[in-house]
Length: 287
Image: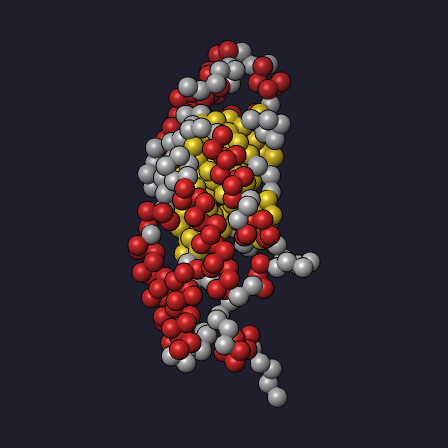
């Protein structure tokens, strides 16, 4: 007797299909660097100016390219000195940006300590639950041609409706907070074993907290399953860094975070426009 597939078990049990739909946008790369201050100080002032001017010119072009932006931040604390964030249309374009940075003379004084690869992701929990209920009521089996056509139509419509959020410009805010995160798998709590309706409920509650901070912080969520060591990356952009603490602290009390969230390393940086690069390497904080 043939074994029963997961999709068939879901149909027999009346449970909705487990995997929520997602739509994807910009490819994103975070690069964290240490700066070789000791080697930099061995250079003459003229050499420092020449190297910084070359890097500033390239970064200015990357900052202002509406087809795919980059932004530089000066990190606070011991985890690194610089954070470069690249938003592009594809992984090929991300690699091109990475190579362009590596060709700079400045790269001789940069030591990349870590990086994070992901894509802008919007989860469609509400749309997924509505669609799966409709398809179940119609007796359409998961992954059948009819199912796949309905899913493709939903993804196409949602992608067009949410295009500005899928391909955002990097916010001009003075501060950034970046961290990766997971949902728990194992022990006595496993996010992925919850029914999709319950995950939808918890994510709606979670989203309400973020929406209360909409006027003071910009949040961009990226998906990294299959790309990096964590499942999602979170970028927060604000002019007041205390907002990061308030937002993340409040979110810790909603169920999805309190029970299922695991957090990685946090990086906080101050925006450094390309025109301020030479000043930064002279020990001056950008305006």
